[in-house]
Length: 113
Image 1 (tube, rainbow, N blue to C red):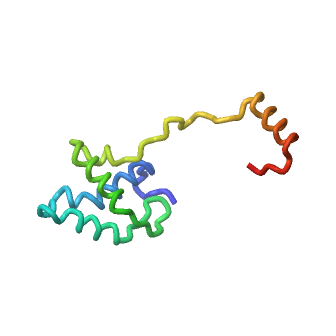
Image 2: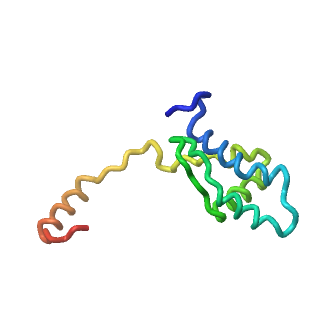
Image 3: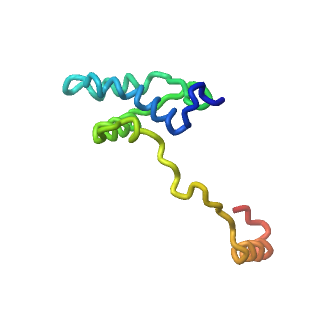
C-alpha cells in the first residue's frame, strides 16, 4: 500500500518515530518522570507505516530513539531506518561451498541442519 504523498518507507518510519517521541522533545517531562512517560507511550498502539496494522514499541526502543533524537540537530533524519550494509548485493553460495554441502549431506543424510 503506497503512501498517498509518495514518501519512501524510510521516511514513513522516521515520521512515525518522530511522532511518538516528538512530544518528549517538544515538552520534556519534569525530572524523574521520563520513565513513566516512556512506559505510557509503550502501552499505546500505533499505526504501522507500511501495512496500517497495529504496532507497539518497548520502553527500551523508545529510550534509544529519544537518545538518538536528542543528539541530532535534525531528529527526523537520524530516526530514519538505516539501509543494510549489504543492500543491493547478491548473496550466493559459491560452487565450492555447494559441493562441500552436497558431500556432507551424502555422508550424513539424516542431518537436518
